[in-house]
Length: 305
Image (cartoon, helix red, strand yellow):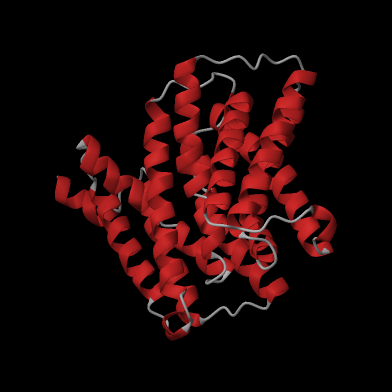
């Protein structure tokens, strides 16, 4: 592949994790207004997993994995997709899409704290500042009057926080787990197994399943975009970038996703963007930057002399 083609592919991959992932909150919000949450997530990931297997088969990519890898992909699929994504879809019935994206943007803060608790990894001064800013930002986000007064909104916010924990634990687990070496196959197994768990959850909660033929046009379009772009394209782009560029550059999607979600929610769903939400967003994203940056503020360098 030529250098220009490689650069174009990287740009397109970044567009995927920035804009497509940021838009999935809107798409899920539209679809969950008509479909049961666990059924929605189950159909999304089962369809994406099966499509990945079909594409891999057509490209003659081996699908075989060992028992240990099956178990590990099942654990990852549950943490990332069954609980980590399925419950977010459920919570979107009670909170705005932009609010959900902003709260989830604090995930790096949670990962940092878990690494301190479980791996005894020391927290650097810049990261400690980031954690403090993150706590302030989350408080400002959920303490708004319209959030407190909205029915079940606090429950939705709490469940999204649990999803953040699930994603954080999943990130720590995947870092050390024995998983399929081919990231495309790895993604396919996680999505298919996670989708199976979501199907079981849907049945257990007594959700009513409907055929796509009776879905509204908006829901059909949303589901198609979620399967093809939000699942296959974005997740594949994410794994591709992790092999091509540095992880901290890939992590910049954390800054962009909430902004995309807020703008789309405001423009398409007429979701209100308050001044307090904007302030909370700036504080939260500044906190995430402090955690991800390798730089040290000049004022702190003086204390090291």
